Length: 210
Image 1 (spheres, rainbow, N blue to C red):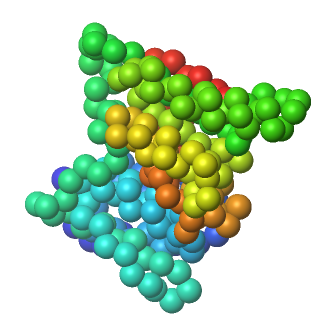
Image 2: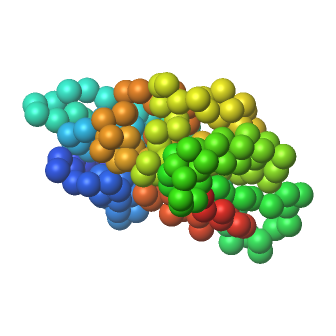
Image 3: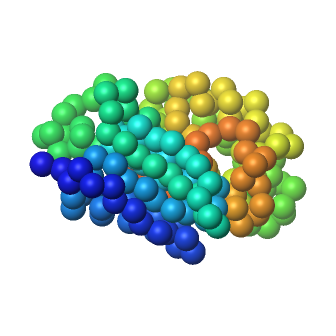
């Protein structure tokens, strides 16, 4: 039985994925019907909201003092919203055979390789454009560090990534976007956190790092 009392955690000042992990631990320990997570940055708001949605909570967001309150309530209309969480229950069921492999591509830079930067950018454009040839095997595209710059306003690859997103899930590191002050400029993909990224790598059949 879950605890019906409202649970509250102050996660202000915690770096990613601290707020999500705090929320996860609370839910795993007491499964409260209602909980409030107080955070102090937009990336945490998005990440905690997605996580609570994945745990069947109805999510609402409001300002509270010097922070933002992400509230989760169990309700009939709450549903799974998180792309990673929907895959988790499949793991461990005797590794059921699938028609296609799950390939995760981790993009950590806005260019490919070392040496000539102009050549590196051209190579990465060619690489990402060619990824569609993987077909349904391309399961996740994850952008971290300098790679997040490819997903924001002004990127020459927005068209390519938008096409890939029709068939695959694109995850973009919220901490990285915040570091580069690009969170409000993201145009493609879901803002994510390190817990999502690690979980995705664990579930993938193959990880390709660029």
